[in-house]
Amino acid sequence: ISGPVINTMIKDSSGAIWLGTVDGLFRWNGKEMDQFHHDVNNANTLPHNTINHLVEKDKNTLLLATSGGFSMYNKKENKWRNFLGGSGTEKRSGLKIFNDFVLVNDSIVILSYMYYGLYRLNLHSWQATYIDRSAFPGNLRYVQKLTRLRDGRIAGAGMGLVFVINDQLKVLS
Image (cartoon, rainbow, N blue to C red; front, top):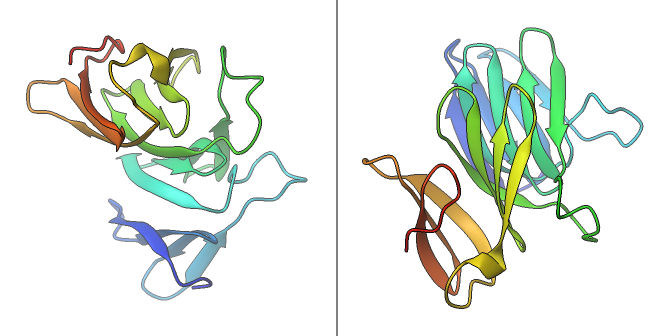
């Protein structure tokens, strides 16, 4: 494994170990290590090499938050689908850092867009709803972590605030 930092790690349904690092995604099948890296000349790759969060959605699909976008990887077809931000954020310069996400159900994911706010992304239609950090009470400087609560609400934390939202991005507290 190249690089000293492993940000996230999972064991998938086939038994493979996936490591999200600051230098790409690695898969260990017990015998061989496969590497996945961003390639600026190939849209069918990771959107960025820094992997911040990784979840197996189902036996064929991985979901990844990276420092350059959100990605859905089809393991069976070896295909990437990348979300780099949508309506309301196109003019933002710099990296499209997605720190974390929560899978609400089979088709909806809530993404933390580090310095800017949250997205509610439909994984089937690839349509997104955006909420800017200014919509939150207090002084939310950025969104870093999200978690799903037992009652279905989503809690988030970042520099300056802890908050609770519903799956429609309505701020509850």
